[in-house]
Length: 306
Image (cartoon, rainbow, N blue to C red; front, side):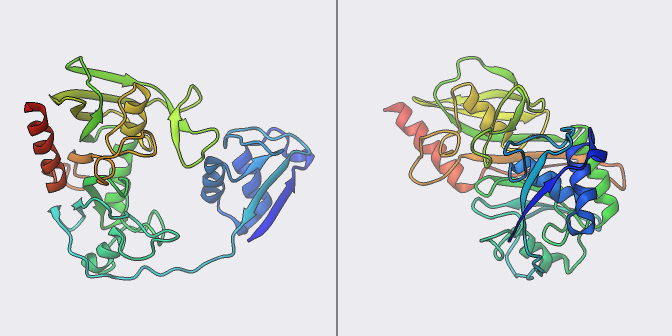
């Protein structure tokens, strides 16, 4: 790991931060890597975090750490997959709770990508790089449910465009803490990176617009069973939005405090619908509530009757 400090030359005055660092570093660091460091808060300007769009000033000091290059190869693992839909261009998997989507530090094996590498035998899109082949979007490790994977770059580009314009149907099911009184509602609050804890997101005026629609399915003594429909798709959106209105997801120890017998967050990606990027056909699948979720609903219903 090499500590880097760049002093911005006069000729780069008022140039975007990400563009400036990219040009000064040449081929040592990609612009996307720079943008990620800026987003994560690991690249600072004069000791402070800034956005990629920040216009640098002459003599600004840009600091970050340059990692030693690591060549990683995805290991094919014969891990059983539950597949909701598959054709020659894409597949939709039913990800189990507890499975990491793609390899990263500390999780190089046992991920969804390792299982996909075995199942698809190399036929995965390469747009997101060697560690994320086929991955168009993600769901958290402790979130179960439907996730689409692309087998080629053409389908990947087509689906990425749909995610960008928010034309994809995504419905999640969760149990949140407390009783939500209204039958349905909308949370329209911008979400951005937490100013102190860079691993968390938060509602902030400087964030991007985020919209979650929710509908009450069932109420218990201390909890509410919800269907949440995403209009946008920000990182941790449902978790952050529900916590922001005082109803964090049960078991979400990042944005709430209450656990339920070590189950982790009770959040499931139930419905996924989109226009097939190649055929144009509307594809929609539903992932049934997993056993842990159904068992918890039964327990809560029994407790409510006591």
